[in-house]
Image (cartoon, rainbow, N blue to C red; front, side):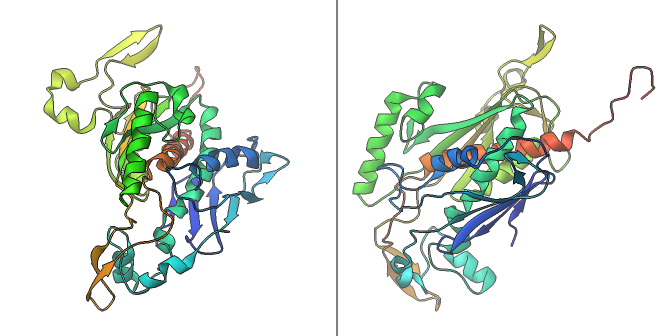
Length: 362
């Protein structure tokens, strides 16, 4: 099973939804970076369960403990290991699913691949695994700060209700983490209605990275956009990724699609940024713009058709504590994964070429 992502800034997550603990080991973090557990916890609290009426009421604190890699508040250059202990896992709700596959989940595919599965909340396939990603993302952001890079994300759309305005200050001021306060109220109402009807909603999360220097990306196979796609699609419940104008550009002509270059005060800039900050798999210096499609929560309290391990038809209703929409909690996860990709490529880029003194030939 693949649980590691990255080449220099490399994270390995471990743990299951109803296991005793979750954790992450992060390698490649340069020494000398000031880092406290409070900085990591701040990001984890954004992802935490039980935040509001539109999230699952599971009562995990998601408290992070640093086991290694930091001494006297500064990174040492050695692997950083973090752990959190599960304290509110109720496995009894899953006992009727020991031999029955939940529709929309990874139960059947894990069973076919491994021949054995953890039926308690999906085990390793659960979104609980993303705790380690967000913890690593907090550290990635610290690295990117040295390059002047700022990464953030927000709910662009939930249940077909789209944000019409953009005010970054609004994102953390509403429980759905959108940039439009008017749309926020509509999104909340739609989520609560779906919850009342024992259903769920999906949506779109947009992530942006500002101040990314040109030159990040490792063609041919580790192109910036290729790694972003892999990172986003590795997150549970994600089903699509577009960069820049995305699929809409397929309807346009090249005269509109091409981002024309201009120089302002000695700085190269692009026009519309249809490319979303990447050309040839390498950053242009323009904002990185990514949108991720998040499907409706698969666990709903409605009777559904399914099968069991004997391949016999069954009826199943999934009870328990589940998000009526995972979109608000997906925002910090998607934000973290974009930061992780950029931090890894930033560190890789430092070995891309040797800068010679002016009096030496290249």
